[in-house]
Image (tube, rainbow, N blue to C red):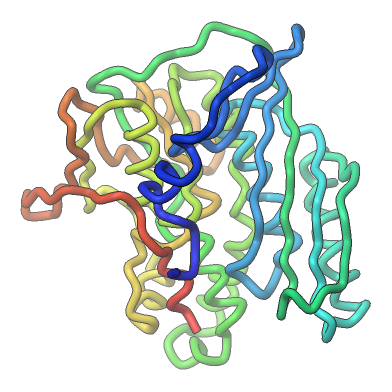
Length: 324
């Protein structure tokens, strides 16, 4: 099989079609484009997510926590605690292990989240560190806003954000020929922009019906998932999707598509008031762009700068696995 996430079609066939919900406490279970599950025990809602870190070598402690917090943020919930499983390769040093743990603890502190448990194990089943994080959050019960035709699709930040940081951190020597010192430092620093909790807080002040963070599959994959999850079609305008110059250069070096590059740190929103949402985000120094609109069709169409339309297909293997 190809490296990376299983395709949505495969997951639907071998997993989601077989799942039944037996407990009334389960409000939201697993499914395509769903970042979290939601449990109701009679008070506040419990929101849960889980994610591994496998596509990066550096700053994985930071990424591990941020990516799990991001999933909780897509539900406009407050992250409370995390549990982390750390699989350690036999050739790793205690210093390497402690560095990753310190990254996790530092990221938890910055986000007022508690590390409440997990598992650590040295195993020859892995040849590099593998982290898997479960995040628990909570939110108040309230009437949900539903997506509708003509809602805008808004994104924060830039396509390929996380992938750009990973490439700069893991392949620094190869990129020194095409990025100057300032550009390389900026690209590596994007690892600190892979958190979307601020976006979640801002969205709670707007008429936002659905959010989704752009992870594996990049912007194109995340758009396909959020639109499919909403039950609509859409038109997406490629030239309205912002891409950093550093990302474009890195994409050229590795011959990859920046729109299909892992993009943690980017939040997608469905909203009936894009102008207000974008204004609030930019007031907080967060780049925001309206990139498309929902419609009643059965297709998700990508429109290029010449007005040519093509069907946006389900996400396949992320471009991050082509970076070496």
